[in-house]
Image: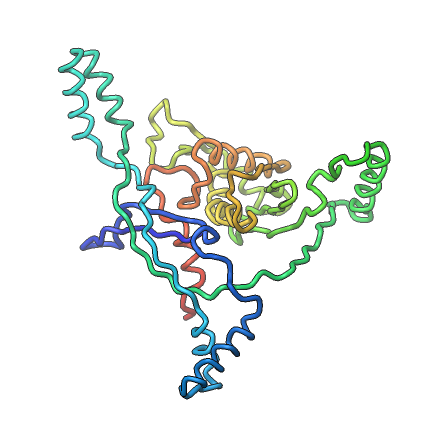
Length: 333
C-alpha cells in the first residue's frame, strides 16, 4: 500500500497527525508495459543515440531511471486520530439536545457528542515516479509440519493421514490439507528481552493466515508467568476505575513487546492486490502462548488490526508505517 499521513507541524515535538489515506499500489500503478527491463533500456538507449544524444553506458542508475513511469493523482483523507478533548463538542450537543427535549435530550445529546468523531477532511496531491517490476513465475516452498518431540516425524504422519483421507473423498473435492496445498511459513517473531515468540503461516489458496504463539519453555517465560499483579488492559486508564478491564501484567508486557511488529507482518502477509479482510485469521498457542493468543485476539477483535500501536491505549495510534520506515532508514552508530 501507498500510505500518506498529514501532520500538523508542532512548534515543540514531532508533530501531530491530522489525517491519513492509503491505496493499494496495484490500484494506482498500471501493469508494466514491457516484459524485459533490459530490453526496454536497450531500446531507450538506441532511441536516444538516434536523436544524437550522448549516452553514458556506465551510468546504470541513470539508464534505469530513463524507463521509470510517473503516476499523478489526488487521494482523499480517509481516517484521522480520535479527538482527545471533546468537552466543547459534548457541551454543544447537550445544549442542542436540551432545546429539543429538555434534560433527557441534553443527556442523549451529550452521549452522542462524546461519540462523534467527525469526517476526515482534505486531500493529498501526489506525483510518484516508479520503476515497474515485470511479473515473473514464482515457486513457493510448501511448509512441512514439524513437532517438538525428538524422533517423531510429524510431517510424515500428517501426510500419511492426508493420503488416507484423500482415498475416501469424491472426485473434485477440495484439498484436505488444513492449510491448503500451499501452506508456507512466513516468519518468526521474537523479543530478546521478554522472550515473547510467535510464527506466521499463510495459505494463499485458502486465503488463510495463522499466528501461533510459543508456550513456556525458557526461564524468561517463568518470569512472565509469575508476574501476576494486574494492570489496565487499555494503557492510560485509571486502575482505580472499577469499570476498567484489568489484566495479568506479565502477559500484557510480553505481548506488548511484539504486538505492533506482529500486526505489521500480518498485514504484509496477504497476496499483492488482496486485502486483509479477504483472509481468515487463525490465532492459536499453547500454555503461555494460549494466554497471549487470547489477548491478541481480544485486541484485533475489538479494535481491528491497528498497526499504529501495540496493545490498546488511550493515546492516538501512530501511522502504522513509521516503525517500518525507521528500520530501513536508521543510521548505524
